[in-house]
Image (cartoon, rainbow, N blue to C red):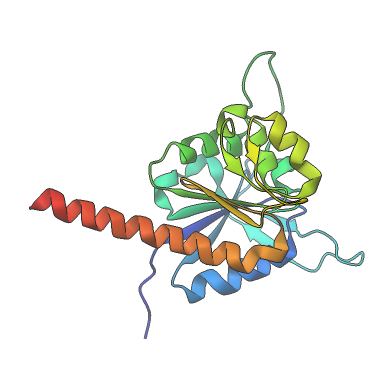
Length: 213
């Protein structure tokens, strides 16, 4: 018997993604009824294959991506996640740059639209806030957590990093933005992410019913 999908979780990805998060996403989200769709800029190709960070010198995981970030709308998804490790740094690359112009990398343009989509949950984990650092308007005044390596980048982009004594907090929820510290908290991150999506849908249903009365 086929169970109806609850919708799609879009995951932005590129070369050097975190393999722990990748494996966990593929296991957990489908069990909760959600499809996982990997998204990237394909540079005119019909598909590209990306490898994970090398573990003990070996790239153990690969993902074939066929969804071009320029061709989708944020509203097609229940939530968008930026995967960790160095992938998001690669996604903010621009072929040409103009002084004073905001970053025009396709993934950054998409993220601007996604963060303006009311009720759409955006998840970041570990190093993935690097993508949001490409445009300080995406982070200014937001409360977040991240890997210790990129604290300065995130704070310089205008965000408030939340601390737990002498480390960054494990998880932070600021409106529709859910951030996780590193792959060590990925299980909690995924649970909270799905919970936030489903709470949002419950609110929308209640609001819709009130409007109908």
